[in-house]
Image 1: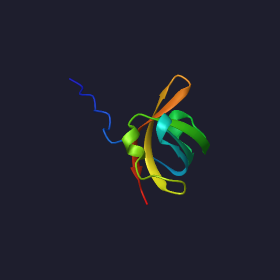
Image 2: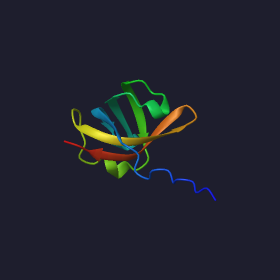
Image 3: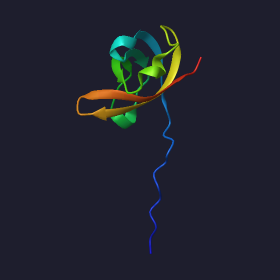
Length: 84
């Protein structure tokens, strides 16, 4: 019997720098490095944030690491870590 390997549970996080934070709309603008798994070239993009409390204490210039999921044409950050 062949046993399948489980997918890694802790995918590597993408990295970026905060350009702007919109707490009221649960959005963050990030300048980020390429994310090959999602076919995203590096650049600047506004992301919706799944958990608005993760935006607390973040401001322009902060370095972050994040996990993003794609839903059709939109991208949502599901994990956000301040890496300053």
